[in-house]
Amino acid sequence: MAEECALCQGRGLVFKDNYAMPCRCAKEKMLENLYRQSCVPPAVRNFTFNSFDFKYYPKTKTDPDKRFNYLESARLTYNAAMDFVKNFPEKNGTISGLVFTGQVGSGKTFLACCIANALLERGHPVLFAVVPDMLDRIRATYDAGKQMGYSEQEVMDAARTIPLLILDDLGAHNYTDWTRNKLYSIINYRLNYCLPTVITTNINLENLEAHLGERTTSRIFQMCRPYRLLVDVDIRMLQGQ
Ligand SMILES: Nc1ncnc2c1ncn2[C@@H]1O[C@H](COP(=O)(O)OP(=O)(O)OP(=O)(O)O)[C@@H](O)[C@H]1O
Ligand SMILES: [Mg+2]
Ligand SMILES: [Zn+2]
Image (cartoon, rainbow, N blue to C red; front, side, top):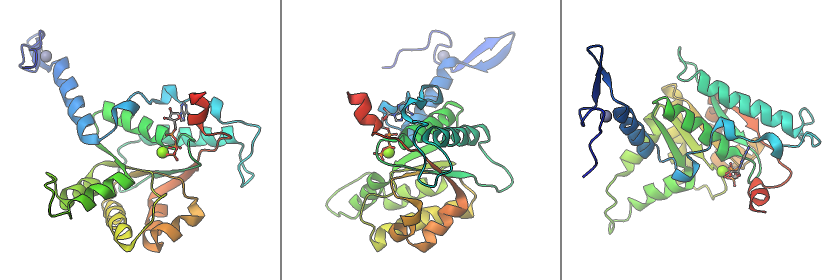
């Protein structure tokens, strides 16, 4: 059995000047539940804006579109992520989602996790969905021999309706009509209900349509502002040295 909180003896409330206030343990429990439902992996819970290091983005290299060097590009992306958190949740039907592009190991997932962690800490429900894993979870429900303990509808509804959806790793797999339809259904719902989405992808924006189809790509561009993280060398390799 879990140990009883010494401050509130398990009531979840403490009294100060005759006023009842939520005990620290109640907030911790609420955060723990939010984290569990968010599917943010434990290994990335410590990814925060403060630990985002700019040293990996050299200013000596320039973005292929020749407008910004890598460091400037990273700063713009980082600032957009910070602004997104600051302004969350947006009002008046505006949806300012983000899409982070860039090569393998450039910090896209790291920055998406910074957003997730910051908003979870503030008590906002977030769903961190690794796209290939989410699609596998849905496919698994088609296997009549398996009892998955959840339905396709539940997985889809969670992705459609969560206040903030993070679609990590959109791309890098073969897109069939089935996959495209699932993604379309999620993106289209979120657009219609003005729910923001943060996307990370290895696919260049010019090639997104070839992978996802016109309808989904068009909606992503309507909902999300694109930012690029560019590095010389995969940050994983650098950190592994
Ligand atoms: N700006 C950063 N500051 C500090 N560490 C970073 C930064 N960006 C990435 N890392 C480290 O590098 C690892 C790889 O980064 P990340 O997973 O964000 O790459 P990615 O761009 O999502 O790559 P992929 O395309 O393979 O998914 C992270 O787990 C983290 O440890
Ligand atoms: Mg990633
Ligand atoms: Zn307590």
